Image 1 (spheres, rainbow, N blue to C red):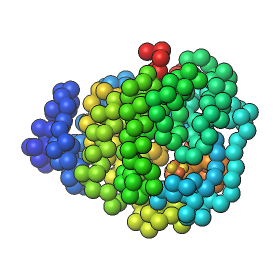
Image 2 (cartoon, rainbow, N blue to C red; image 1 turned 135 degrees about the vertical axis):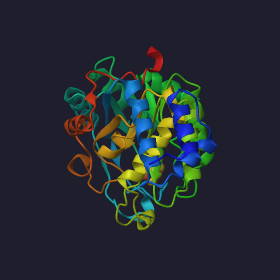
Image 3 (cartoon, helix red, strand yellow; image 1 turned 180 degrees about the horizontal axis):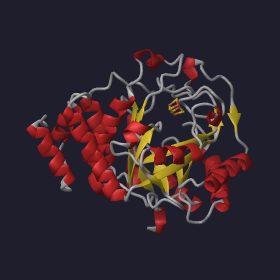
Length: 338
Ligand code: SF4
């Protein structure tokens, strides 16, 4: 059996530490998933990750703060007002958010993420962030996953004790979402121009997305200086408009993870996959998420009773994939301490 020579050349280039081009990333996306080339791609991405991160895997843990019908009505989100999937409203008290974040830390999470819907009051989020910061170990990275904001808010997040932000230009942003694409890009610029570290992701991937669209987001994350890149599949929650298009396989997700890993090279400090599955953890991903509270991919009010994994489950999965779970805090999000 032989690998296609052009594919072999691209993989050798990436393994040698050189950047690959968009055209080369597209060539990799065109690989037949059942071919020897696919296994060579998987092996190259796996080698890059195990070499760069010393066989260590990481668990980031996210607390969803509120559940409310969101006016942005993204076609893949259970919170979308138009879809009527989640009609109730719920919000954790400040004490509850602090308690859950602390429980994640005590369970061995390597970073804590706080998430709200896009329309959540910004100052309220800052108050919660400050309270969580005070409860966590001073060196535990805190990451915000919220709606769009500008340079002033980026500084406020840093002042409140955040080290990073998860922010993404989603696939077909502005078409499958009602979000202003300029605002989305403006937030990415504000993060890039601040001391906040960026977590990015190619998401939410469905069967209809073209290799060109996926490669575009791989490079966008790189260009905005993401320190944590990832790929995430779309969960077809019943009742959402995009759910009728179905779901990609775990192996297709693994392929997007692998190509993304080669695109970002050693510019990243961890490579994520969502949701956590073994196959992508063998094709370049070494970081997964534990979750609690509301989750836009779940119909349970508290995702820890639904599809959300615990820190313990994530650490077990990392071990099953051949990683040693990182003890202590991540070095991915450093904020002003870098
Ligand atoms: S993904 Fe975010 S912005 Fe879109 S509907 Fe859901 S909560 Fe709102």
